[in-house]
Image (cartoon, rainbow, N blue to C red; front, top):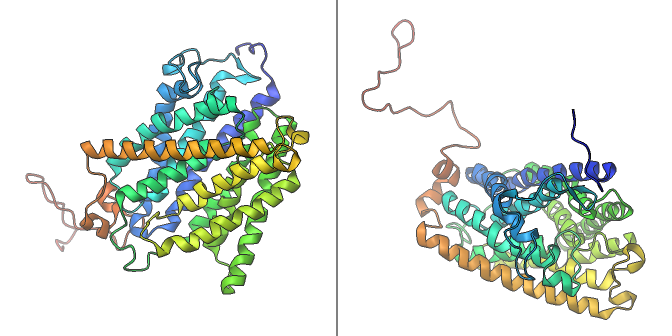
Length: 430
């Protein structure tokens, strides 16, 4: 016999949020394919495991402590411990959905955000050090920033608009990746030889699945099966389409060729840029936002390889910079007629752009400082970086004892002392 529905729950809203939570969870394995295709084959499994590990370590940390720090009642700076170990998180209504489902939906955001950071660290960070950093970062960097914006903290009180994670997710992950790349230093072969993607089809598959999951990411952030969910859903279709169109045209104008990696990157840039604005702007404004967001990321991604900054998979360019662009454009294009929340600069409220700029600056500073301190802390206890020999051989074998693509039929097994030899084939031939 089923449990009676808690008062205030709405079946349609709950159904939509169940689907949205599953869609957002899918985004982390999708990211594994997106990132995994962009690295060399000897690091494909390690790169993908960095995303899959977030499902475990950030997911568990979120349930035990992170959710409480982000969403329990507390101060304007941090949530309290009222929901630690999921205390008080049950089937009671949180809005119009079960509290437990709200916790899970928010947890998928924390998981994905931490996994995004890995794109700056691939092909050189030791996996045990990464796990320690990942767990601490989810608790001490992501959760406080989520509280500031969504959990009753000071940025939300100030009126900062972030519908689904421009500051909390993308600026946060982009700056963390940037700092991580600086702390670790460039890969052994960076600037000495071409470092090419080993599977562009993997990257295209990852981009497609990310776009699919993003409908839950943005649409689900309405927290109801409502007209605002429909607005966010449609804007999540239109903005990346505009970004992709502009990106392809820029490629054709510059080189005469439109690259598949560029197309996949453009989709992500457009999705990132619309995320803070998805429920606040009109569909036509979403097209404008998507088209404009292509420009800073496109030209930064052309410039970055000329520097010594080895942000391996351009997390800052694709997420940090696009998140900044989207957050600021939200302050320009937000329209109260569509959401009932606030107007932006173009609709008579220039103060909203100032609020957005302050929120962006705070997110940049906190993420950069928090990430730097956590990497230094982890580095006190275990080396952050693989040895040059391990980098040369590839981190798949060095960190996981596996290969993404085995060559031949297997290596010769070296038996431990005292074990009997393998039986010879019939006929006595070796």
